[in-house]
Length: 345
Ligand SMILES: NC(=O)c1ccc[n+]([C@@H]2O[C@H](COP(=O)([O-])OP(=O)(O)OC[C@H]3O[C@@H](n4cnc5c(N)ncnc54)[C@H](O)[C@@H]3O)[C@@H](O)[C@H]2O)c1
Image 1 (spheres, rainbow, N blue to C red):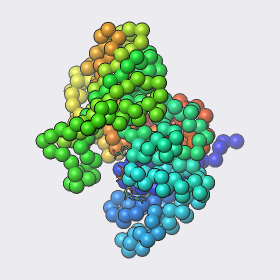
Image 2: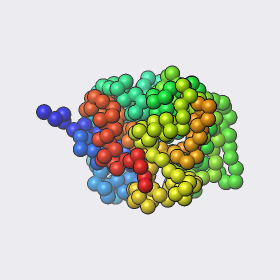
Image 3: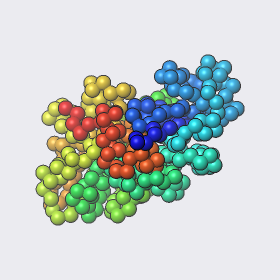
Image 4: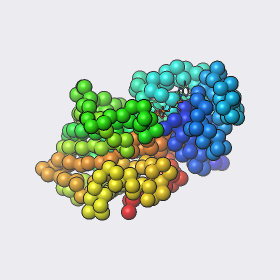
């Protein structure tokens, strides 16, 4: 007997929530029951246009949403009562209050990287620790930068062994939809602490990884760029490193020799691939920039902050519900449904 589809609700229909909702609706073994938010602007109206059932996360906001022409199916509690898993995509810091509500109604929950690891006691990147999250009550999909680190450095750790990793994280200044509200111009702002938070965050997924990160944000909004210096065990050659990267899920090579010589070129390629919103769920690493000398790999890779965590949320649903016991099988299902590849060209 096939297992019944997981019933899923999404709370917070912003940058991450709208993408996760669409990704869930594309899975054969999941059913998107509805999405919930507190605003009645174009973003929520787009959800209605896609036939998603809309709920109001705060009961007092329901009249405003109706007045704006949204057909509201109920309040958040009504949605929670209809699902097996809630994906919480509300702004960072709201998770703790929401979790109490999900727990009270006996529903499993997935949180995002803006929440602290302590909220769930468990953090998630599918290729690194899917099985460790099986049947748990709640987990946290780590942030976009941490996901990028765990996928690339995690693959090297798993395939070759990492002695020490040092990663410089060059972060986007703001998200495209709010570039009119904040954003930088003509400057770079270093994070005031070393290590920056991404290193310790990666250790919530890969506890044995020796990693230090430094970060800065700059005046662009198309993603993040990482520069990684990774000391590997047993002095591997370049071809060994490349083989591991090529075989890892959700990593895809790009090459300056193909004219993909910049962040905007990667973004343009996603448009040419007719990706919705130019999303890139994969981490793109520069194959021809990769250098391996004396057992140290130096690599540069790009992370699309708005979409890289989307497949991880889908896999987290399968892990928590036990829909799929093996991470690699969940990853394959998600990747097939979304069109995730190891090869852009
Ligand atoms: N934007 C990114 O690049 C990115 C990447 C990875 C992880 N994250 C994490 O994902 C989470 C969501 O971030 P985002 O960028 O999607 O934010 P966002 O601001 O784009 O979306 C948040 C949505 O939640 C809604 N909301 C506000 N208060 C609410 C409430 N009380 N109840 C329900 N909904 C409410 C907002 O109206 C908005 O639609 C955060 O933890 C963030 O750190 C963001």
